[in-house]
Length: 441
Ligand SMILES: Cc1cc2nc3c(=O)[nH]c(=O)nc-3n(C[C@H](O)[C@H](O)[C@H](O)COP(=O)(O)OP(=O)(O)OC[C@H]3O[C@@H](n4cnc5c(N)ncnc54)[C@H](O)[C@@H]3O)c2cc1C
Image 1 (spheres, rainbow, N blue to C red):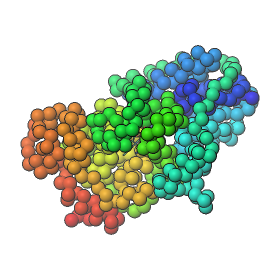
Image 2: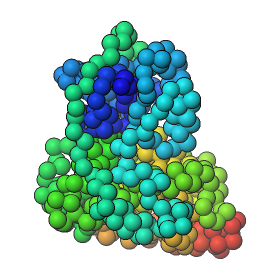
Image 3: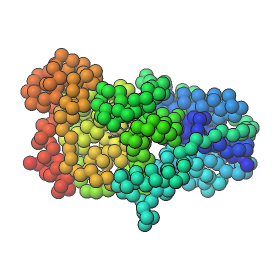
């Protein structure tokens, strides 16, 4: 057999199904112009991706293989490859609409086989008895656990001896030759901290929401690019005997990809309710510039802009404030996060924003609205996180930082007053979502 191994979201050699297939292989990676041409010159993800792809090339070369790296559209790359010399192309499944269409197009030219790698389960593996997809997480989760028990799908893929198909292509790509510059925002993949995380995994459930506890695994970026294997994380959590809460979150990630696969329209449209917020550029700019005057929200946005990351609890607070207090369309927030998150993943991002807006498939109701002040009081009690990102508040006592009436009344140098009064904004949101149109109170 002779195969093209198309690396995409699986940039590693360990536990990679692509490297478990015997025969002659041509490993490739495509910097996809269809995606890259829409990104700004200093996009931090491209800098990261460029270094990860080159690291993978080195590793493959150390194994006697190589990685041919292209900067083009997949269609043009497959036009230049001698497809008649290959039996098939293999790649890990990728389930957003663009990816599905891209792969469909290539599959018309050469036999195309998906190997499951990015997620634990294939989207059609876990279905209800009537053959339809699950809509609620808990029964899906239980079905997933049962499936693992019976099918053993979390085994490690062992590398086999593969020989390299000789293909004459030696273009030396650089970030600059693709029209990008090295980003100033560096991404830490947190791989060295993983052992410590698994040692302390028993406290994950209790501490994961506390912003300053560093109690989460920080693997989302490594998972996004496939530097870590999802099966390996599952195995490590399982071995620890105290990893159930963590495994649940890993399966949550699968669930979101599963929903987007089965209901692709969720990328743009609500599942429930027809109220979609009010377009308001001024409010949108205020939140994007971290100028809402609500400390936990502004701290989250600054963290995102400065680091390309945001703690999960803060993402939830920001998204609730965005869609409810500011009544902005969830799609705007989703696009803003997509632009800045290192771990941006279409499924997790879209479904999480729909969850926050109360418009998604999950049972989250529109009237569940986070109070950002109570949230920060609980999860950032001493305002350590807030003060880290908003030094303008460094000299203010934490208890005032969590106190809306203080912030509405005080004149704080270089920091704005809250853009809305939470209780009133929340009432307007509830009425508007209830009646499907803007309702003042
Ligand atoms: C509005 C919003 C947008 C989000 N956008 C993204 C995104 O684009 N990409 C992304 O990977 N995650 C997204 N998330 C989910 C979550 O915030 C991140 O996965 C998490 O912060 C990553 O940190 P961690 O690896 O330390 O997580 P841990 O708590 O250590 O969890 C381990 C892994 O489980 C998965 N996971 C955990 N929580 C969730 C969740 N709520 N939903 C889906 N998967 C989860 C992630 O892959 C995560 O890396 C979003 C959440 C919200 C509320």
